[in-house]
Length: 77
Length: 246
Image (cartoon, rainbow over all chains, first blue to last red; front, side, top):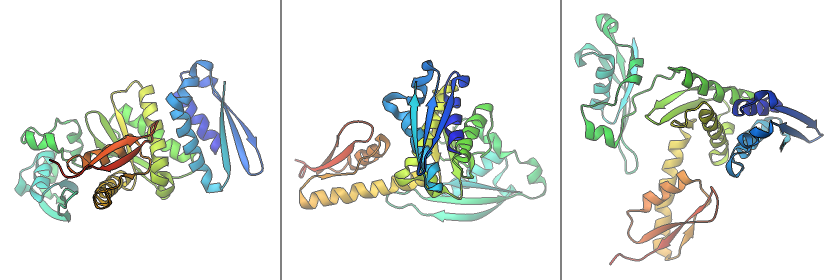
């Protein structure tokens, strides 16, 4: 499940795994995932020039292709 | 007991097998599994299978030992130029490797695909991982996009583990090697076209690793030159006509 995927990646990369939460907003054709991490960890899931965030989104859309659904990831602080 | 080894030539593969198993060459039977002769852009490769019988099987060292060994000192020049990749032990040999393999496999599984991750090669500053999956084509993605993303996350995870000295290279279905070959071909074809039309040609956006292959391939060709254009990670290479060297 996409939620688990995002949560797993985020928890693996941050210093404070307890501060990670993912909120799922299920739509008809698309799902929005809201990722929250501790404010000190925000850089760990975004990366320089958004490289890490982009990689997470890429992996996420590869996961979503199998059930032909769109998944959007929003990173909140 | 059987083991497989590879070398650029049959002799080299047999030497590697003898050294690794700690046996003399007449103590095992050799079967040639695959023999690829070298081409213009490709090095030759011979894959052999070693059959061990009786005493030899008992005396043979476990091939896993190879992993900790220093590179071969017998042929320093040769080894330094083109390290022969003896088949690495695919299993994790320490806690660090286990963590990286588990992380990579967990990502694939949580993406909803089944997959197996093993060690492809070990170098001083690199750890090569092989991803095997029935969904390899999805996991590789267009132009390796998905494979690159998983590889990047694995590398970020590795630096989180405090091992910034190691770079992870993730491959599946030999995608990276095949991509490299097709880029070399593209470079030559583009150079030929530029020479013929005397007009520059702009290639599709590529990552730094891919651009480097284009630059180095055309570096030796005197009548064309290459230049990167654009901003960010994915720049484009332009191949220009320079004319005959004076």
